Image 1 (cartoon, rainbow, N blue to C red):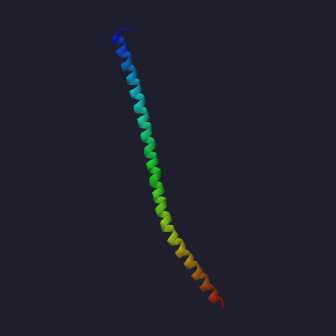
Image 2: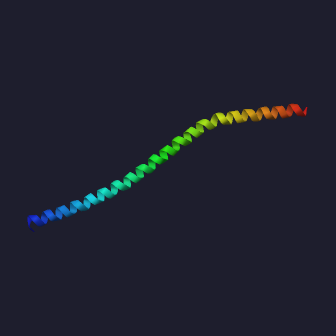
Image 3: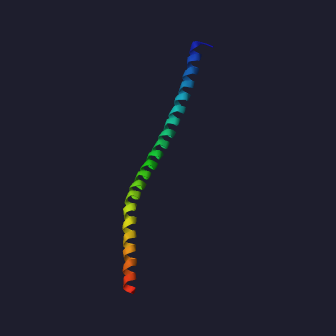
Length: 75
């Protein structure tokens, strides 16, 4: 085998490895984007949960006042 043949074989292998690395990089980028989207969704759900707690307290208070008012009217 001549040095030129050896260099050509090494170059072909290098190109194959470079293509594989590029493929893995694009797949990894897709997964990272998906994880970022999920992280954003959980952030929004956290905001909704923070808003829901006071709304539940207010709803419960209104319900209790409504029940008390209804009970007083029936007497």
